[in-house]
Image 1 (cartoon, rainbow, N blue to C red):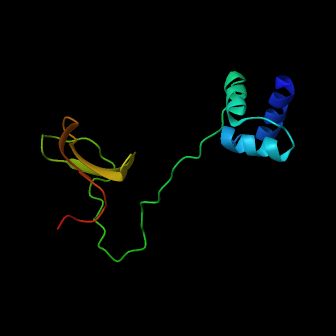
Image 2 (image 1 turned 90 degrees about the vertical axis):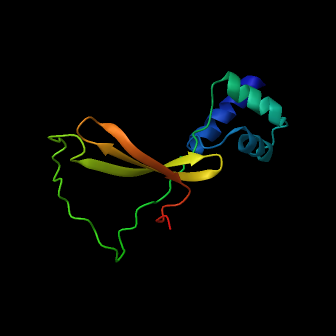
Length: 128
């Protein structure tokens, strides 16, 4: 019976592009008339190495439609500096945490690639 269930699980995974984990797989098998427990489905999937593909979290952080002034590109992709403290660059990235999204801004001196400063906030607004 396990071989039949594993083949059904493979068929369902193929049909749903491997997006069903054991809870949804259990419901699908029940709907198809199989008498199984959720723990059995989880065990069979684990033993057969049939895991699901997780959807990646994505958050849009760029808003190009604004009326704020845009800084001039004076660096013009020249990523070298003649002396320390002459050229600093900065970037912002977002990081998923258990508490939600956090935004990290880092400033780097291009002379020696050392971090000059950094800031972490839970939003991208200017500090007041």
